[in-house]
Image 1 (cartoon, rainbow, N blue to C red):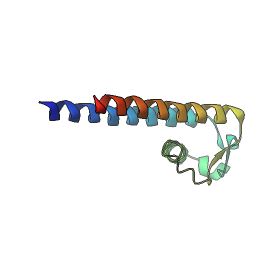
Image 2: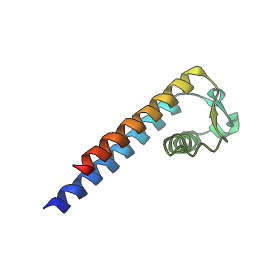
Image 3: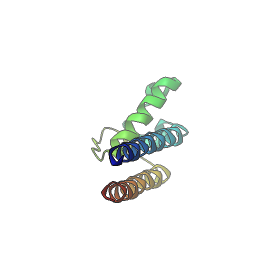
Image 4: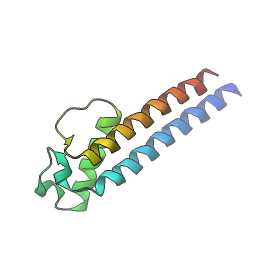
Length: 101
């Protein structure tokens, strides 16, 4: 019974991570290429490219890989990115506490 509970907890954490990624990808998609260093106008020509680059930026920020190829160019994006990193830290800490119980 404990194994099933742990699997459910892990699946909930994975689902939470996916929801966070999708929400922030959506938020970053509202901003055009001028808010990011490393993106130019042609990379934002269609919605698929725009969402792909914002998804890449979100996952890169969440994983703290931060390759540096796309970086924030406005205070708004910087604040949203810091919020994303803060949510990651809080989620990881609470997830670890939950799994250790």
